[in-house]
Structures are given as structure tokens and as C-alpha cells.
Image (cartoon, rainbow, N blue to C red; front, side):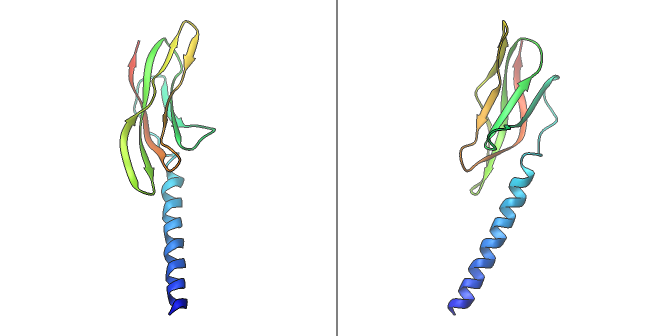
Length: 113
């Protein structure tokens, strides 16, 4: 009986990891194409749990919006900290989904000149 339970537990764990890998493997590439012209949203190059919103030209403010998905399911949409560009100073908008969340369906929103 113990052997059967171990096999079932191992199979269930492997299936769960496979499903999580498929879900999270698609998350970074599931970027939204919609948004203001000259702006893009993407997963951070240094932290897979952070969404980044960037506008490449013009002065003003903007924000990044994304859903956060993890083992507990999907949550959101959430907005991060605003980004800006003014008088030669610029900062990207960021949204941290936490250690167990991964951003997806990201887009730049609320762009103001």
C-alpha cells in the first residue's frame, strides 16, 4: 500500500510541476501588444517576478499594469509604481508580483504628458 501511495504522490507531484512549468514558461512571452505608442511592457531582465513599463520618448508619467499568476492562481490586474521622464531624469514603471507570482498580460497605462 505504501508503494502505491508513493507512486501516486510522485505522479501527482510530477504532473503539478509540469503544469506549473507550462504556465510559467508562457508567462514572460504573454505580453500585451496594446498600449500607448512608443511604450512597452516586459518582464524584468534581472527578476522574473517584476513587470517593467517603459516609454522611449517624451516627457511625462506612465504606469505598468499586469496580472500576477502563481501557485494560488491568477490575481489582478494590478498597477505598479509610476514611471516618469522629466528634465533628463527618467525612471521605469515597475510592478513586483512577489516571490511566488509571475507577471503576465502586461501593458503600459495612464500615460500623461
